[in-house]
Image (cartoon, rainbow, N blue to C red; front, side, top):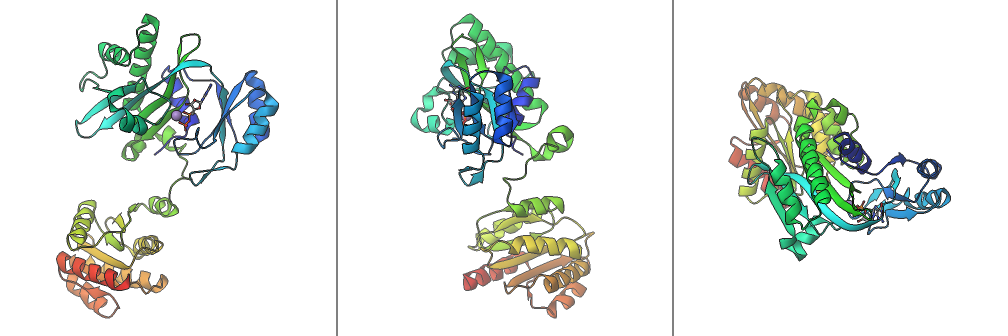
Length: 380
Ligand code: GDP
Ligand code: MN
């Protein structure tokens, strides 16, 4: 789950990170009122889930409330990288001398929380990684004790801070950032830019937070502020129906029960030269309703040229699933070829039912994958 900048900013503030004051607006009039309240120069920022808003014209300075209203009316409704701006953050504008980059990420390779800092802040870190990789400093937080004070200072020195006060402020911010990361089960907490203001103090001007969806149940307050507008509609429908669905770029729609089996299915499809159009785990007890929703989700993708069912019946009974598939097909008319490999409890009955349908039967996973790949190629 992604947080918007204004949500990330509130979260960082709770942990004592110095952020800029301001508020979020959905209309130019609201933006104007916030600027009036702040009583100073402001920056108006598009709240959309993409980086590089600055370059795209989604970040603009305004000197007066009237100008804020004007700028906000330009930014609201604007398209940035295909997303419509529905909200703007109106924040105090800061004059600064330098932009720094700072983040905490989950580094899967080293299995640690990696702190990343760069003296070349302001631009996207991927750009710095390409143009000047040596300017990126990485330091793993202590795996048992968390980010240590001396580590945070080391990071400050590594990006060239020398002023004692700035080193101390940076270390405090880095430590707080690490605490936000751990406490909210994040996979990324990023401040870019973290600026050195003209008065010498450090302040976070922009931040980005990604949360681990699997841990969201521990954070009902954060789950409640989820903005689903950037998600493909089918993924929202899938989540509402408790289906685990991830869209991919291939042509073979896969309907499988169990996450491990779903991964194995995708591997075997690949092995036989096909490419999966999705990852989908319909879970146990594949009722007609679940199969129907899952099928609708799969077929909503115009790239899908064949569908492959791979169901392993344990507690789930294969004949039930077969009935579910047949009933669902009646309600979701389609000409897309479908291959079914159903095995496990009550499989004979399941096969008998499917033999009367238009589904292409398969006995093994390999056979099903080969038939699905062939059907997809024929339909492409
Ligand atoms: P991003 O482009 O989506 O990452 O959005 P940012 O919030 O990082 O803004 C992009 C750029 O706008 C920053 O790197 C700054 O150069 C500028 N900017 C943002 N906030 C302020 C501010 O308060 N004062 C000034 N002077 N510039 C700002
Ligand atoms: Mn930024």
